[in-house]
Image (tube, rainbow, N blue to C red; front, side, top):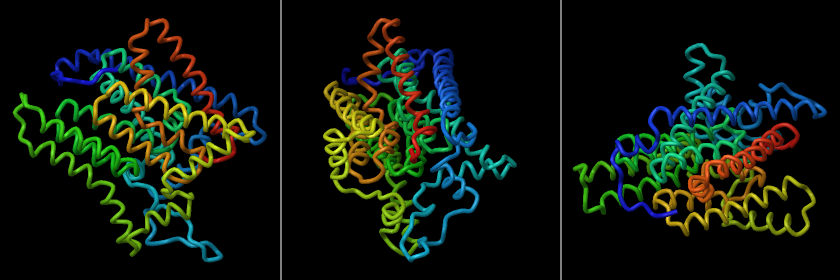
Length: 391
């Protein structure tokens, strides 16, 4: 990987992305991964003791929380169990995805159908945005490789589920495309929506702020845009996560309400990586379950991939976003088996494989990505059918 030293024109970027045909190929790659994974879920579902329908598999776990937010709104305050202990509730979930579900329900679509429709449409947008981002940074083949590698990663099953990852990836990739092309109004809007979609949106907003600062430092501001545009875009995006956390605090009457709800419901708290380190140490030393072992290896591989990516000097906003997002994932306590899903939108970890695929001979690249996809798609299908715990 090489650092970007100049910003191509919009026409250059469109040519590098392959125009409409390139976007069509990206959507075709996404479709192949989604259909392939649905087939794997159907196949694995027939071998479990208590099979569920494919539809039910796509609407489990966090999907129920998003649907309750969409249809019933947020609670007025804390939720307590029968014995008086604090429990997690819907306030832990950021609003953009459930708002889109609610919009679909408002026009007469069944809420469950709306939830999956939004997720699937967002997956298409994510594929397009990933292709444009990869093409903008490294060329057309890299754009296709980024789509294929991201959409067939071990936790990519959530792109077909009523989860917010597909929407988040679409927004964060679109934000970086807009920032790289210096379309600041779009970058700011997408950055705000990203920050209101998931807590990791704070890392994305920092990445956009770096892009804005880089734009201000350039001596060849050939586009003639005033300096307030990138600064405004960054400020709008940076406001997103504090805005939602502040609203939760106001609604509950406690400044730390969102954090307490997260800890009570899912054991999520920032412990500077102590829990992750303990999990890796225990699992690699004496673990006997293959899912914990595979998660440990995924976490280590992602760290190594991020190191390789940083050594290649990627575009600084992507690097900053990726590093901060990984600190948030590795630094927090919580369900260890959810961490591969949380790492899915961290684009930095995918860059070494993307660049290698773009430089390899087409046959080698296709065979390598196919092997990756077969494992990744099966792994995700296994987690939502055979593995009994939340993803």
